[in-house]
Image (tube, rainbow over all chains, first blue to last red; front, side, top):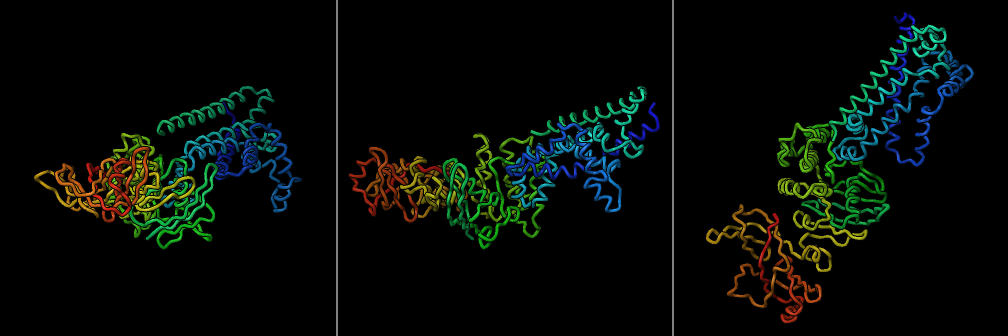
Length: 226
Length: 355
């Protein structure tokens, strides 16, 4: 059976995934909207930046974050000046890392969904007296619903599986930064294959169910659309 | 109310410069070949595209000048796109209510029920746009535009995306619009038939400029403009039902310049009708003929003559204020010694009812 400490690791993982996904949706929605609508000639540059975590080894990302958030980095210096401690090896630091790491998984489906809507429904809404924010909330968001579903689940599932970034900036503090993927690594290191099996199976099942949900629901959305 | 529009529209494929004074009542058609910029002009009027240096005044309100640009959602207009562009996430009722909910109650002059009834969309209210036919979707789009009680209704070829069979399904609804509501309409079209049927005022666009503008009767009968030649040369006459001759089953239609008697079946007295008189159905005589089977003979004055093909001429006539066209041979014109100012009798063999 799963041990008490592994349950704690699982709950840290779920909490991290939930907080990161929420942050990603809040930040990713305006970013995706802007990328989908802008006619800026250099928009490929922010697009490439968003996609970077897809190809970068997570350890590279984690390494730079460690430098940036650590006591000698600019962000670390700032938080210490404000009376806190550096964000490296904290839950907040993990959230920052996860958000960057999972950014493309949230921004790209949203951007695709917003692009697919096109300008026309928003123009129609404008001729029907809807102001820009109104148009976004009552036309763009509901029409992009399948994109939001995909973005939420992919962002969540991807954060569940995060390892490299956490390894670099998370440390291994039980109850704060010790997540399931790290716990599995520890079990294997310690040749405790039974515990590794349990925890791995839970993660595998959870991720699989989440993806089943995305694909299933998206299929249903497509069927009601023309 | 009148509409003053001055725009210089520059896009990749074309340029269009217009300086227009449009009537603030009835239907105005922007007519011209595909790609001449009609739709861009309509979009500029709606504020969907912003062209600097433009000027637009609707009634007493300035919608655009050097200093200001009223955004689309603050302009009291209705817009019907070429494709219905319904909100797929809302049902038909939600679509029609969308704009209506966003105007103050005091500004509502068209009720939901009125819009629904006028376009016959009552049975569709609970349906999703995805389940509607093309014709139904466009009717919902028109009802949705009307439900904001627009002070100006803009329509971009509302029939273009609808197949021929469905057109017949929508046409009567559009016709009833301007009969029943007193909302000025600006309508984009590349079909002479559509213009002949709906328009009161026409703006003829070609090669990036306004070729001519004026009442549909005048523009259709101008010999120097393509419409007189393109549309199978026909004059448009606005008449009113004056009575019905029970004995011979003929409807009498009065217009400024005389009366037509046509076989159409009884129509309510006083109702307005638009007639199309083809130039080839009009022959000319110097004296009023007796002993002829032709019922409709009008006294007219020759205004202008232009050559048409090798052997023909097109003659523009005027009966009181109403212009007419006659297509005759050059030889006949010569033998009758036709010239501007001469009085001739036009014998009209047949008249088509457009309404």
